Length: 311
Image (cartoon, rainbow, N blue to C red; front, side):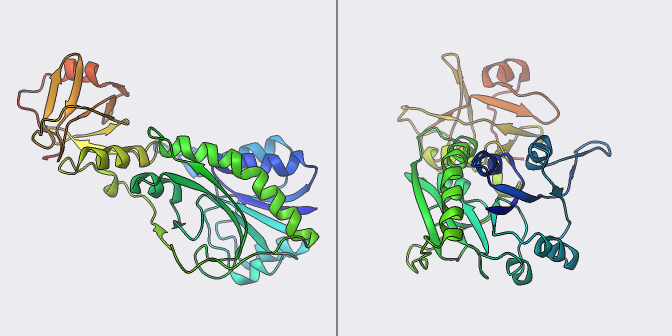
């Protein structure tokens, strides 16, 4: 089977590896252009590019995947099928038509739930008990194509987005491989998605990652885990600067407190919410390293009462 693979982040690597390990010919790997670092002019290749080059695969990093020259390159390869895992670009109809059996996307949700850019993050934020992965044939529309296969995965109480995505990436790799093989052999029978249960997973933003301490503790817990590691949940400090927060721990303290009020007691640092306090684990003030919340509190020497999120 001759395959084109399109993917960019670490989560796409297990799928690419599964195709190579199965003996399929990966004729071309499409991935996003090298990203510029936060400081200086250095650029960095995507994780998929690094992995693909280590295997000696042919890699292309077009600014626009559906540009005429890319379509010509893809069509000339005479590929049986194409696989997509978190590529990060919209594929236009002419590109979709350049591969015999079409393009199959591995999407990290049980479609039609959480169509869109951040399905894992939004599932955690919403408090879903179950997530999963789906393979579908790409067509016009946002993650609306007919389903080839699906799997489910429990969302654990302490899962961050990184934790859940890693499990789904590895579980989804054989699902994608099998789906491609079934489609090319004619054994697959893609089924239209249900019109019930549709939800949308909007892309995360730094602005949206700010913690609202007036919300209930369990909502804040889910919000922070959903935004870990990227873009990173954050709050403001009393001097107006910002700090990233690691996942918090829920407490059994039944006493309501002032939202954002820091409570240092019994060897722990907690913060008041709209319900009960949450215990901080790690914090990373702007321009500094990540540290234990207790170390931060000892060194910060804020005047009391200290309230986060006011500035």
